[in-house]
Image 1 (cartoon, rainbow, N blue to C red):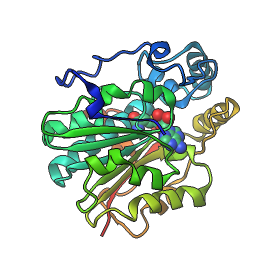
Image 2: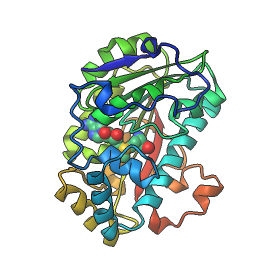
Image 3: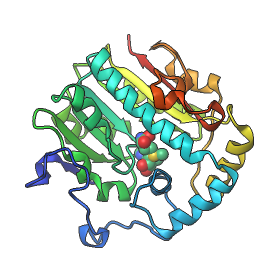
Length: 293
Ligand SMILES: C[S@@+](CC[C@H](N)C(=O)[O-])C[C@H]1O[C@@H](n2cnc3c(N)ncnc32)[C@H](O)[C@@H]1O
């Protein structure tokens, strides 16, 4: 398991910019195989959001996938905005000061800690992803406010024990106080329903009462003619993933107090002007937020 904590930052620029550390992947660590000849979900997402941390294989896959799924970039932007609204809401309306964000993706401004620390600078965030390209760029996630703290763990979502027992998490988060577990746009990569439910359960179990589950995941409900062939295109390129209907997404919140407005297309969750401007048929993610009693 690779990991970087904020102690490793050295003379990091703490201004909140996320572009201060742009590594040459070749120089970072020769032992990390980025497999640049195969498309990766994090890099396709980065490309479709307008990022630069992607390779020809990712761009070619994105071009093919969006032939079937032309509104995928719109849906991804709606998802990213949902993540920002959720982080802001939890920090400002619910007093959450600790976040565990699994399936972080490549740094994309604003990152979750930037949104939450704008509300409460003392906020602490642990990021987790299993993609080596995210690890290579992880230092950009560590530009915490001076009052708060961020850490990064290179681990798999399905390995709850490794995540929860890691020194990075234990040094950053207090398990006796509420934590927001954020699984934003990652559960569609866990295709076995029982396994996905067990993962959420294992991650939530040790968290204190008052902790929060915030998630979003792909649905074909709003545009089956686009999403079904689009998901097939992802799977044909080795990125194994599935969409879920509303009932399947609601199951993740069983036993929790689902907050208003429940499980909805992400543009309907506490919408701002940008979210209100998006057409439902162009949004292919359900999202919801719930509190652990
Ligand atoms: C679509 S991106 C979402 C990024 C960010 N959460 C957002 O919503 O903007 C999905 C991320 O989940 C990561 N991921 C996929 N499967 C994972 C797993 N089993 N464990 C940890 N991370 C995973 C990918 O590497 C990628 O960075």
